[in-house]
Length: 142
Image: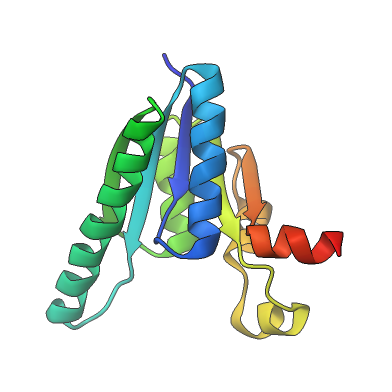
């Protein structure tokens, strides 16, 4: 079975950085990626439908990027809470690696709003890579 990387993806800069790393790893290892977009539970069916449409649009772009790099990829759009959803889907799909973007919010913002990366770090049994955005990498180098 091919090396499988599940990447959390919403089209924002941290997710794009995670996708780039996931594609690089899968490409080097002859593996595949699962681009995962999670719809947040809303009681409004119209809001859920809009989120699904957005998920289709952003994952289509990610699949095109994978195709351009010669990496086998599939899109997965699911209605689940982010942390539990990524963990469960990675386990169900037999992912060898879970990759997510790290927004590098301030410690205060992370404490007040919570951090997906931190929650994943403490709860997943699937190996996890948290990828900083290029901006965050550049600011640390300065």
